[in-house]
Length: 199
Image (cartoon, rainbow, N blue to C red; front, side, top):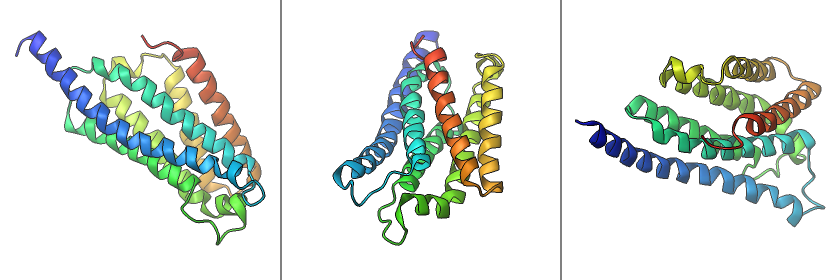
């Protein structure tokens, strides 16, 4: 197979995968947006819990950042089922996180603060899975790709993974708040510094 044929084939595969990933991520964004509007629709009924809402914003940023950065996958020349499976799994975890943040029903809980405190273990477990899959996916794309952003990526992922593991180990509202707002701030900086313009 010559280079032109390989490039055309890779592009067609990328378009196919991008459509599937877009459909899955679209479910996540729709869930977050519709969930967030509940605070506007029912201000007297639905009370905002800052930690919960920080995670709503953070997961939204993670999703749109992945969707934005996904265009770089067009440079992938060889697609394997393992890479495809990881990308789909990564996207599905976003759907699960969005559903955890905005469940179908919370009448059995005393608001979002009570809901988050009782379901935080599942949320942190999914968050941990998301960060680990990200690392595996990056490693699968090769050493050059892994080191593309120097030491910044491994340090960031190590801190994110350690923080999610800490959320599973320590039951503390202060920890929840510190970790949520730290991740939110780091994600904003990460996007602004490294991904403001696609190259």
